[in-house]
Image (tube, rainbow, N blue to C red; front, side, top):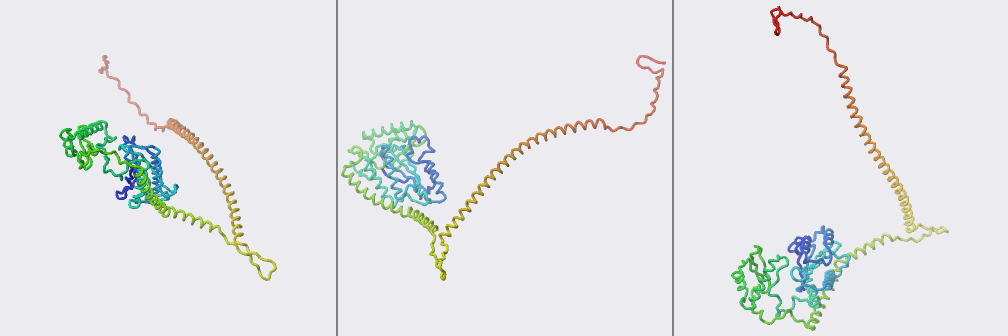
Length: 442
């Protein structure tokens, strides 16, 4: 297991925590979400905390890291134990009430275990708190990783692999590839390993020539550690990974007797644990003292000073009674304590009177508001009635006006002046010679 920083890097100007959340939770790749698992924390906690510090305009507001294992998986109890111990290390000296939230997400899409974490470079007061500084914290984090490795039997990148076959000859296809491509890569890797074992392919150059001439693949790219090919399935390149695709790899090494991992005797384990635990203890103590001095002590001192100021405001002086000369009786002047108590009592009574008046005002206000509501309701009802009768009378008025206008027009027609009657000309009798119709008159 090894610790790496994968997000929130200052040089790359990674300041938006939402991008890291999307990556860790595979929100844009739902087909990969079956290979992830949230172990601790939540997205809402991060976003809510981010709102409280966004106005601080921190140079590097968050950090994302990973505890990367070579093993495919381990027990759940070990995972949570590692998570708890890791948080105690990064927040050493910081009480829990001042710690920012942490999101832990398990990834297994690469065929091995990854414990990814996402948190803030700030405590909940808003002050900047760098979780990891490479120059000062690398050794502490490496000591932590090595202790976990030797205690649980995990492989370590610092082990001696001089006589160990560390990497596999070929890596399996990624889980996100289509099924057809997975089967094609698996069969291709099997054929290549068979040819290497039969010593028909001896190096990377011969392997590339075989892929082009025999398998008929188009070589898209050749890099230091991989070979990318294009198949007949589609034009999307497929990256082939594994030890056989490494530059300079001599395939004859595979025929030498190798071990899967370095053998660790109990003496070696004890020696390594003592060495790393001693270094880790010193580093953790230094980190605890630094965090307490720089981040917590100022908070406690500020709270202490506020408490002292409050106590000073309450403290009052006491005067000694003065004895007047030429008087048999002692004359006492009121002490500041008595004056203060009298003032407090007077203010208390005034406050009580104000409270009584305030309660009376509130009751009257409630009564008035209730009356206003009732009046408003009645007005709305009355207004509705007025509108109804108003419409009715308007229609009746229009009807009445039209009726009266018709009657008036009927009875008030202007009389025309009588025209003088002129004698009608007498009708001429038809002459006998005139013929009307079929008869003749004489």
